[in-house]
Image (cartoon, rainbow, N blue to C red; front, side, top):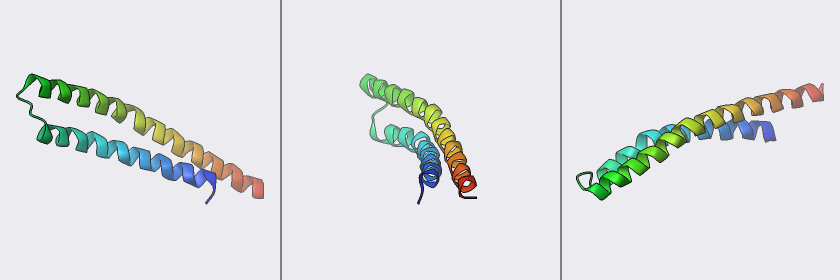
Length: 81
């Protein structure tokens, strides 16, 4: 498998991973941590900030990686002609 196809697959994986993290991590955090204590609330806030950051950066990076992979595949195919 060439590098362009790997980039497309990796980009799609990053988008799917970010969606799973945004949905799954806060849910797991709320069920595992005790939100009624101050330390539990602080930990949940930290988790929420990290998940929001990942949720905003990872899909964009994955989409750009997919686009670059598509361009690489196209250039490689044009080079063979």
